[in-house]
Length: 99
Image 1 (tube, rainbow, N blue to C red):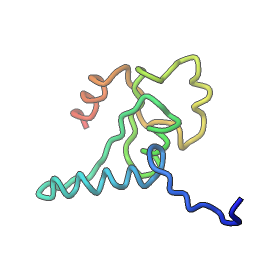
Image 2 (cartoon, rainbow, N blue to C red):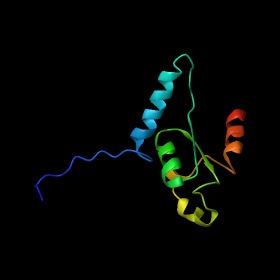
Image 3 (cartoon, rainbow, N blue to C red):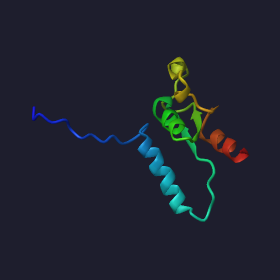
């Protein structure tokens, strides 16, 4: 209409900027701690797991919320596959504590 292309900036998951901002902020808040591993816990492979994998986080898919076993065949593709799959948030926290 105006002969110009809009300058669009996307935010939110799975945009890499969102995950990198989170990691940077946590490092600033806890600068006296050495953080070697970041975990992304999520119920949605299309946003949570995809973004976590792209930003180098350890990904944990929880089978709650958006997750649906009936749709698990749609979560194919290396970027959408979580490193770990657990039943719920508590199990995810227990897994992290073991690590």
